[in-house]
Image (cartoon, rainbow, N blue to C red; front, side, top):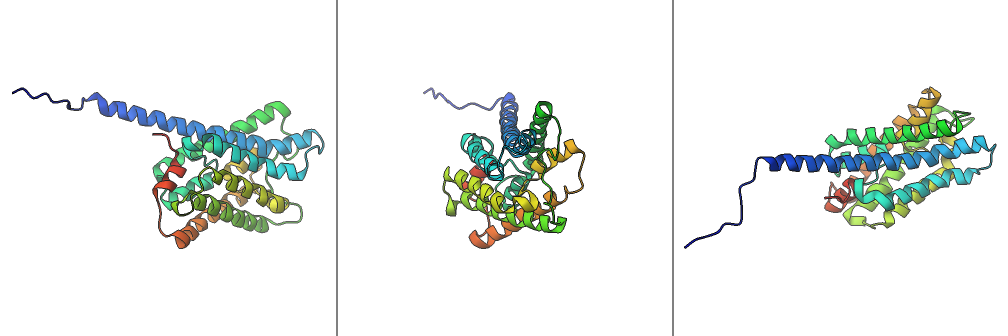
Length: 256
């Protein structure tokens, strides 16, 4: 009797092909992070730049709502690719929670910074570097300590919303985009005059780089990262240790 075996021994080239496929997929994710952050910073910094160029044609309400709407749009159109972190504080929080591998976090953060700087480069080439160039700085009459505390508490809320809507216990699917975008707009409506309501180190670093003014960058690094880490601790208290499969897909995207 002749028996035909349909299985075969893996060839030496298969691990190489799998590695190439993995690296290509990661490049797509990194491009997604860079592109999404580009659009976010284009709106967040661009609002201030255009407001200066038009001598106040854009209202304060529009300046703070536009980034929230952009984040909402980006999450909806490419959240499945990379998770749409768009923010180093979000990447750090997902990693600390266990939803995202630490080894991939540096690539995401670099892609976010590149996207932010590219957006500012576009704005600089189009309008020049004038005024505050859409940068985030403590408002008139407020100290750096007040601003860092506001950035801390705002980011605590933002990351809590992101981790909460991404978890299996509270998963709301695409509606998470509405929650995150709505929170960003709401935070800006009351806190923008104090600190600029950045909640995002990449968004604040890029215009500071073009102004060559890093005097207040510590506010937008310390506040958001500390707030993100406390939000991870709060997530543990609320829902127990992570991660779960829903949160992992939300953090890492759904591409296979």
